[in-house]
Image 1 (tube, rainbow, N blue to C red):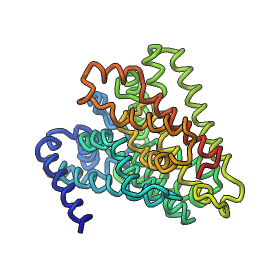
Image 2: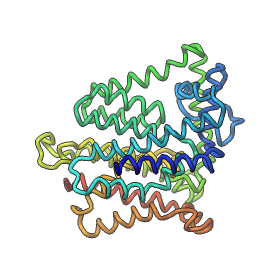
Image 3: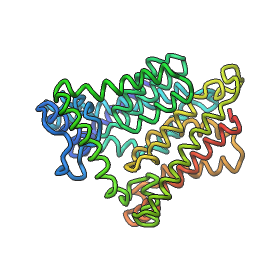
Length: 382
């Protein structure tokens, strides 16, 4: 009964937030909806005239929004907002359910995660973004990977890559971990998604769309590197040093280092992990996928701060592991989680928040959290 009442209360709060404020916003959802309308009319999807709100996703994504494009704007927003709230609940539930070796109460893990990442969840819902859909697809894939259901896992990873291109990071991960059936299924879904728009646009038209997508992503990146809300490694150096070859070179080197670190984490899997006594050792996929989901926001040159909501599994992992960490890492982890959750624009004020983001402090904070996750694997922390 308590769970039912809590769910009803949260649903009412979400409905009130939508009615009072959010229905007037959701700018990013309008990008998806416009792309859906263009796909239905077989029109070009990628237009420089759209400016900052240019569609930058795989052409196939536009077709997902064709039904919503047919609805009146407010009705379409209401449907997408309701779906996003449901996806948020699913993301938290799936991340909790897949977490091996839980020692902390479930309520504490969920509460700590919401306190840490709540501002990103709110921003995602206000914009009408699709990162929650991506996250649910990825964590649902993880859950199936843990149960050795490789083909469904691969299909879900492939779907996540179509929703957000940074999901392509899972393809080499599946190959390196020798989950070849999953890798094949993921590649198959991506391939089908890449060619499917040809059924509407024709082969030549689809090739034009893919080329235009590539140009849209590349050409829109430089202007976004100094945006205060960009938390990518590339943006960090651009803010510190100014855009240019030096910042670009350091960003490339650091990004490659992070990729190598992710590879090292996989290489440090405990031998005979299927029979190890450690829950994290027996189910190593959770830590690895959590790390990759956290890293994508830093690796993508257009990694906006709210993309860090994808670190939901990593935050649960870290909170659950706090009792097993050395005291210095307990303090560092707690401080970083607090710095993430408490640095809110409405609390800090425009000037202080602007300085915090201009210094890329959040990127540094997440660098520390990634370091703790790596330590957990290196020391086989349960």
